[in-house]
Amino acid sequence: MWYISTRGTAPRVDFEGALCSGYAPDGGLYMPEELPQLDRETLRHWSSLSYPSLVKELCSLFIRPELIPREDLNDLIDRAFSRFRSGDVVHLRKLKNELNVLELWYGVTYAFKDLSLSCAAQFLQYFLEKKGKHVTIVVGTSGDTGSAAIESVQGAKNVDIIVLLPKGHCTKIQELQMTTVLKENVHVFGVEGNSDELDEPIKAMFTDVAFVKKHNLMSLNSINWCRVLVQIAHHFFAYFQCSPSLDMHPLPFVEMVVPTGAGGNLAAGCLAQKMGLPVRLVAAVNHNDIIHRAIQRGDFSLSAAVRPSLASAMDIQVPYNMERIFWLFSGSNSQVTRALMEQFERTQSLHLPKDLHSKLSEAMTSVSVSDEAITQAMGRCWEENQYLLCPHSAVAVSYHYQQMDGRQPSAPQCCLASASAVKFPEVVLAAGLTPKIPEEILALERKETRCTLMKRGDDWTRMLRATIEDLSRQWRDRSLNVSE
Image (cartoon, rainbow, N blue to C red; front, side, top):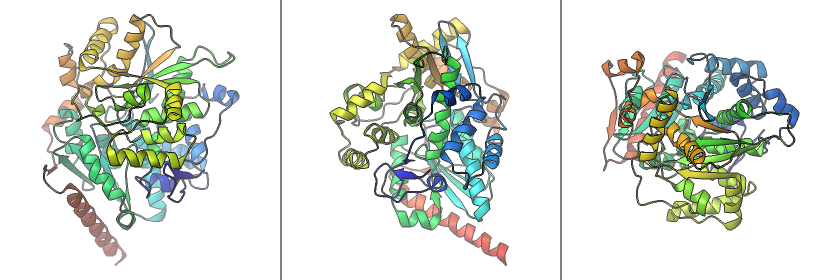
């Protein structure tokens, strides 16, 4: 299995190369050169598997045994999930009025990103230990990615991690989950800007191929292929939990409602579709609606500004995984994808070609949900089920209630729940509900914090590069001392 850039001019790489990178050298994102096609018998076999076993089967299709032998792969995935609060790792909650909620938040930081990042970190450390190498991970976060990435590698001797968080745009708990980790290999920066703005210096840095190579830089944002790979499992597991039968001909469809910001879970759903899983996708976004406009009208253009919402981790205007989706639905056409993305980067405006938009809208639909609808969905779900939703999960559940109230017939449906409500007590209160916060979260307020401010007007790229150069120098000094 080889991986190629969506823009087609970078050399192909193996899984290790795709994992240990950020953007491809040509500015694109890595995707598998070929997608395995799954027959009915494979789906039937997979349907009886636990979530961890499903992740193992899926990863074995995309990671050659010469890179990670199957026994080692199984051990790494078991280790990745060993600290989850549920032995099942994920759990389907069946609620009233045919509301199915797939809880993806039993990891240490109470967010779905723990699932893919814990696996990515295990794979990464496996390769690093074999080769005695050091990497610096650079992550931009809108809320949950940073803490999950930090948790996955904190204290690792051959990894440094730099996280840029949007100061004032995360919840207090999200920020504390990052700034209270004081391990020597963790470096957190609070940026006076939104998540799209802090992505700009990161992308600029990753396009400097010589700098990236010199300092062994990589990213664990969902630009990283491994993140998307593990997230494909969400869709298979949800399908098997919600499908009425695998004995029907053809196999029944299940509608997957995906709350999304940067589009990683959505890209994973598209890949599952292309592999043969009969799912219909619903991209559920807040009022930052570029994905919704692209699906409905073919309009992939920036709005005047990011508008803060109650679902703050989805306050994104540049959903970089849409590049993967455009590549998939253009028939893996790198030339078309490169032209589209270069136009978007140049003009911040793009109208999708008619045939691409047609294929996109056949594969999925979309909804844009207001703050009012978010709190209404949270309130209604509590009233009917005594079940607290986080605001991002409520974006998906709001779509379910719209469909139910409109009495629109639909296939069985599953809403992906991306985080626990315990991370968003302010929004729970805004919905007129009472937050339930575990002691380990409350304890964050009593911990020491460490965070370097990147002020508006500072040269963020220069600050980032200087930090990376300093970390490389420290690693070289330590290595010399050990060898002496």
